Length: 181
Image (cartoon, rainbow, N blue to C red; front, side, top):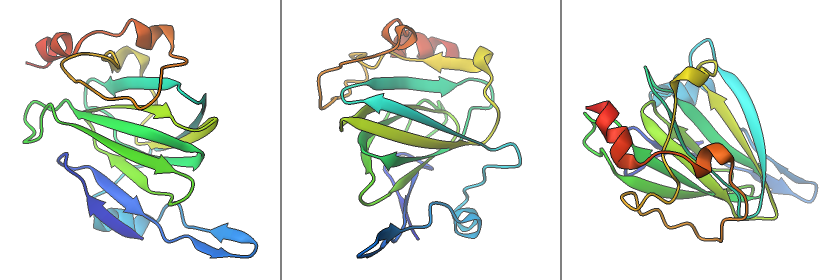
């Protein structure tokens, strides 16, 4: 498994090597030793979750206050445009938006350190996204910014076909900034 750096400070792209033959394929989806060698530590409280979304669905932009939340994200089926926003005021890449295509062909994983906003749009008829999160969910610490906030200027490739009420009414990037400083 190769580990690459991304444009946002601390973000890593894990690139497994799928072994393909006439039966299909086999790939390793996580290796603790490789992750640790690149500063990826999910700790003892890690949880695995999965979401399923229809094409055009947007989930995000989500984050967590307090000490934040680290996560490892991958797509088990289908494809998504995965988007990160650096919401760490002390980061050299603060405010930067970066997008990644994650799919079930190359199996790239995205390491998202604490303090980033995360969201995605399903690009295929169905997309199953798997998350390994470093600690249990704490709803009182959830933060969200509108997926179409003009200050973030995220370019979503498809028409939005579904979005939760929470995401539809999420606050602005400027409002989040006021709470960070």
